[in-house]
Every structure is written in C-alpha cells, then in structure tokens.
Length: 164
Ligand code: FES
Image 1 (tube, protein in one colour):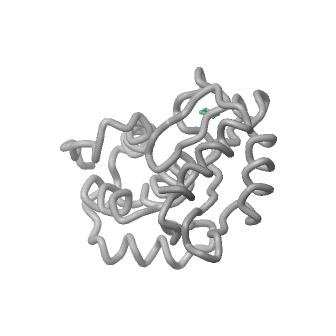
Image 2 (image 1 turned 45 degrees about the horizontal axis):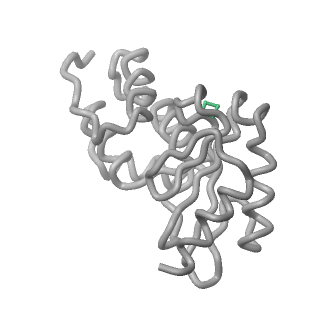
C-alpha cells in the first residue's frame, strides 16, 4: 500500500473527490478503474491531467493508465471542442433543474450530450456530481463553476463563446 499522496493538480474541489476514492482503496494500483470512474463522474471526461494524476498517485505507468482509459467504453477522453460545458446531472442538480439546462443547451447548440459542434467550438458533457451540490444546479464552463444557474444563463454563457 502506498502512503505518499501526490499533490492535487489544482485547487478545483473535484480533485478531492478523486483523491478520496484513491484513499478509500489505500492508493492500491487495482483502484485504477474506480479512480478513473470517479474522475469522470466529477469532470464529465478524462484528460491528460486526470490520467497523469491517477498514474502518479497509484504508482502505475502512464501508458497503462491510457491503455485502460481507452480500452473501456465507459470512459470518455477529453472532448475535442475549443470550449467545454459540463452540465451536472447528479441527484441534487437533477432535482433542481439540471435536465432543463441540458436540454436548453442541446437546443441552442444543435448537439447532444457527449458531442462537439461541427465547427469544433463547443463540447457538451454531462457529469454525475461536481462536488458543489450546495450550488445546484451547477455547470462548469471551461473550468469555471457556475452555480444556481438558469437554463437561459447557461445558454448565454455558450453564446459568449461564439463571439470571442
Ligand atoms: S449533484 Fe451536482 S454538484 Fe453534486
């Protein structure tokens, strides 16, 4: 069992959820799938930062982590869009209007969850809990958490990207 913990990649509270998962499993290498699952639930997808964090923390070669992340269909690697909007559909956000936000965004962009607009500007992603349930319903726009957000405000944020 490893006892040394790797520094969190950033201040983003979601990393603490991922870290808690690894700690629960004693930072053992066989916690990899659980760890990736937890990162994907928190961020909506797995990117290089998340994969490296898991590799370093669990003492697994990064190549193996990439291998696992790309082998299983349940894992989604970072979407291709210039901008990424993550909509939380965890229990608290679901109850407070997450699905309405998602459908407003799908309508505004013409794409479905998990897709990227044809011009590669916006990717729409769904997460299962961003770790900020007190702010439900919550979304993340390019790493910026927005809480207690209305569907129209979420659409406005996406539209801002079109003009920048
Ligand atoms: S359920 Fe959305 S932040 Fe926890």
